[in-house]
Image 1 (cartoon, rainbow, N blue to C red):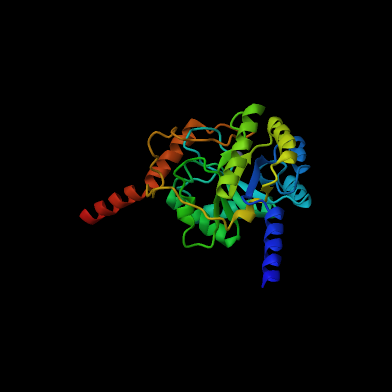
Image 2: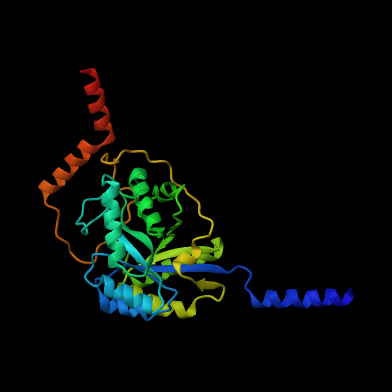
Length: 306
Ligand SMILES: [Zn+2]
């Protein structure tokens, strides 16, 4: 019995020395891939546990997704989704008022343009991700293509997790943006914040962009990552506990919420894009209005009265 106890003490002691008690998993995803191969190649030279998200309509999308996969990085589709603020949009940006078929087509084409993708995250998207109806259509398509959803959290009240309920789609959420500014001291501070959150909560997801300053900070800081923090691919956090802090947003598509600038964080496109002509803007607004559930409701009522 004494022998057994002694053996138990030795085993427990060895385990305590071998594994840090409060290990944290940190996933870093570099967005907006496909426009700047030079800087992106520097990202691909970093540890394969860094994940990358590729814009499907970017000129180097297929090439960078293939290279990333070959270098052992996890690949995500970085799908443009409508923001609340008015700004130039990528081609095929998802809007809440699009039909299920249209959203399915855009996701199918994105899957074809970004080989090896196992997940998808949103580029911009404060308007799209805050629409429950819009995100339910996205989740149906993601389930078909067996993709997980990384919520970039460009708006606090994202409906992604709520929309995925009842589907087989797994949703994880970004905690830190590394490079809201391109100042290296700021990026280092954000990196440290991500490490602290990973340690405190067991895991954290940070998103950065292929800016030269971000690349420099990652090159400096990744080799000196604290020993209790492990860099992991985003998909290895799919089974971590997630909390949904959103409130239901049942606004029908086409009804733009007020005060669109509060709490909005943008994932800026890296190249100037063709501006949307004003006439097209008003056409879209009037189309959305005509399609809105509220308008259809009154149209129905009116027909009933006649
Ligand atoms: Zn982006």
